[in-house]
Image 1: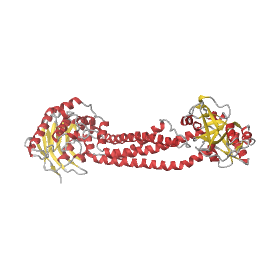
Image 2: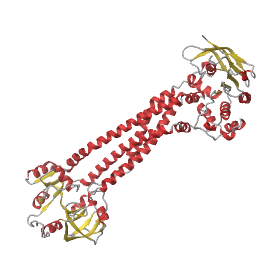
Image 3: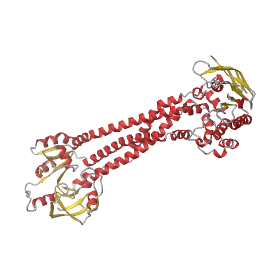
Image 4: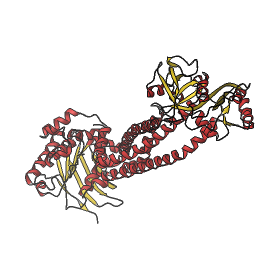
Length: 212
Length: 398
């Protein structure tokens, strides 16, 4: 499903981080590991074509991501990649449901409200669908963010430090949710993390190295 | 989920900033619109009062004063001209219509104008009740004069000497109201009209303590003239000026002069209005700029979710357009209220012209349009900056 080989990515002109090879099957998970500040986020975004400089190769399914440009890249990212950010990132002022629907809106595809509600229901926050996003607790917001990443049945879900600053129980719950999400949508799940609690659960780990 | 919902969520996040900026914009729009409405109302009013009069012949003195007193009924006359002179010029072949007016008395602030039945014809005034005057001491009241004085056909009133309310009443010569006019929106609405002879009648048989005028040298205050042809415009003023006691006054010129005098104040206010609009545009620019930098991560998220950069541009432009539209609507409402207030205030001052701002239309749409254009112009820079949001930079936290 996802195959990245000898990937180097960076901000500005020069690459700052690299990995040898990352291969994940549909419904499976892999970790990008390494000390904080090494460039895990940068490499994670590079997998979605969001990096200033990148070389190597990234294939999602049969698509050569690094060959995509402009609108084609935007369209591909919108339809086939789901994101879960460390700070969760729901937009205040919009309801939880609208935060989910922001994804198909931005991607320019049909908005399946029933599926969005169903996902919120399945993740245990169905009753919060019409609540303004800023009134959700952190745990509820995290579930909503995972639901958003699953909404368009992506081929790839990218999660950036999803368990940072969570207590053990919450971290395990988030890991469960993410693994279930990958399992249910058939997406390849990639988590950038330095969290030992996650590392203990997922074998497929790729170390990110800094480029001096 | 749609663009409007998204933009509204952004706007709601900065309620005070936007309330202030919309307020500034609407204030600028209101001031400029009110000025345009009032000056247009003034102009309409002047044109209606002029009623196509080409020339006014009055006693030697200021032509502006002659036009103000004899046409707009706002000032004291420069004096009287002899009936003989008036008849002589009125009979000229260059004149299509000559209307004499005699002023000098009032009834509770409404001027009593001695004239002929040609005067109401100038304004196309029709009777609402009663009939036209047929003999001296019969009066026909303009619509607002009748309403204000509470008089109707069959009632009587006494005139007072002078042009504003005074205690110096001509009690021995009461007028009888025989008719009331329909409203015209022109100066005639505020007048009490009567036959020329009524005025002579009163002043030739005055109270014992007043000087009587000589029936053999009857006078009128001024003569309103409409030319038969363009020839009149060339010849008449010179002929009149050549007479030792007469002063020609061309209403078109005098009212233009009056307008340019008023115009100075209007220009200052217009400058103030334009300055407020300029400030509003800068306020919009700063607020949008602040909004864009505050939500860089939100914009990056939207990009990450698959949006093209042009969507970010549209978000900012739509935000500006919505608020500009709101400012325009509020500004038009406030400008209308301001103009209506100015019209009422000028009506309250009895001698001032009553103002009726033009009805809702192109001007108001233009005002809303201008507010939109202004806010959109202010959004160009911030919108471009927003569209250049770099998700790779914003989202790679560590």
